[in-house]
Length: 287
Length: 265
Ligand SMILES: Nc1ncnc2c1ncn2[C@@H]1O[C@H](COP(=O)(O)OP(=O)(O)OP(=O)(O)O)[C@@H](O)[C@H]1O
Ligand SMILES: [Mg+2]
Image (cartoon, rainbow over all chains, first blue to last red; front, side, top):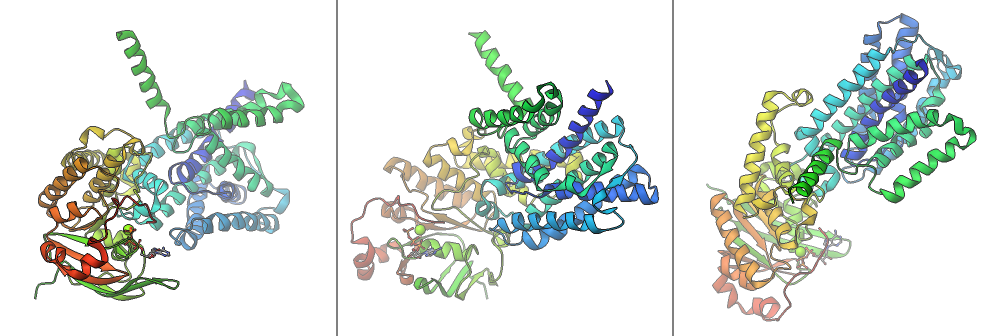
């Protein structure tokens, strides 16, 4: 039971970070191979606070989110200014991730490459509470005028600007929202695993986040959340397959890309699919 | 002294060696429909791109109601009261028609980020008003039945009307239409002409219309500006222009296929 709960909690924590990348990539149309760095900043900020200063967990989480948000502003402000060239950001965040890893490995406050051992503070209530609040608030935000602006920017930046949208500020907002979610995920992760190391937050993890969002479907919240759950829990569930575990994982990704190139739920959500399904049944029965 | 709504003076823009717009000056008074015509490559679309700050001028000035637009970003020009459509349609393809028209309303919306997170009653109210306003704009273009369709699935003619609706949702004083009748047949075109005239009155906008269909231009324009090779060739009332020898020689006289040619922005 504990084992299962542990898997589900890890999945829940991962889902929060995936939600962040879904906002940035799926809804705003910008790519990043560096969002794991934001997870790392959240993890280390909160970890350092609880480790060295015994900070209350709640405050440590908030600080993790705040520092992540500020870091995203520092990267975003200079790079997202180049309105029609979003590749500046993509390249800078890559470098930022590397710089972060090297710094974490050489600072004494982070205990260098050996990593920090922390207390297991992320109880189920924290994890599932944070996941529920994140999903709810993100959904609200994406339904608001800001979500509408994100999607317009994704669809056509030139036309979006001609609709009166400040491209720079809209993209920056999307980045901050996504980074703060990743920071929250990091803070919870650090105190769930009770151990963090710089190598846990590199491009490999960023690639996984991005792959999850693409496999789940651009412009969808529920798709990436479902795929995140599957991807996090499957390696565990398939443990009996032993060395075939990773190939099975890869095969699933390939199958999704072949049969659903738009991702599991490209540009749709589960609730609207259910409504659509009901509608079809109604039509079938009324005949 | 009253300013004209739009004053373009000594405007130039070159791309590499090509002088797309060459020391062009004209004024547009509030109220009418001005046709901006000229052969392919005359620089008409470039003028729109300059007015809307998609490109920076190499030299010259653009004044809206006496205020210089120099240095403004496109979204600031939109907020100053200019909206446009694109020669090669640029809709938000995967969004519904209603969402397309709601976008400019969202862009100037009032509610803040925190209210959005908690979806407060004021957020919902604002959203409802935006929806109603967008629907009535779709209705004004006669396409309210497409509201919930995905924009990219519409036929061409309706996509062009949707672009006009989205531009109108910016609440412009000046509306720039770049070949709205491209790819339309005669019946659709004359219907579009009626729509443009009606929209001009109902929304109280001033319109500049780039169009190759001379019949449409002569039918609805109150004024014409004729360009050739980036420069002003003639300016005046449609009847006078029709009889202007230089214009006939450069443009009107040459029979041409209906102008559905696609180009960049
Ligand atoms: N971004 C650009 N880069 C290089 N050249 C350009 C660019 N935009 C326009 N031009 C050139 O400027 C000239 C004027 O182009 P423009 O699109 O303004 O003409 P137009 O009058 O709108 O023509 P059409 O009726 O075919 O749409 C053309 O020679 C075109 O190739
Ligand atoms: Mg053109």
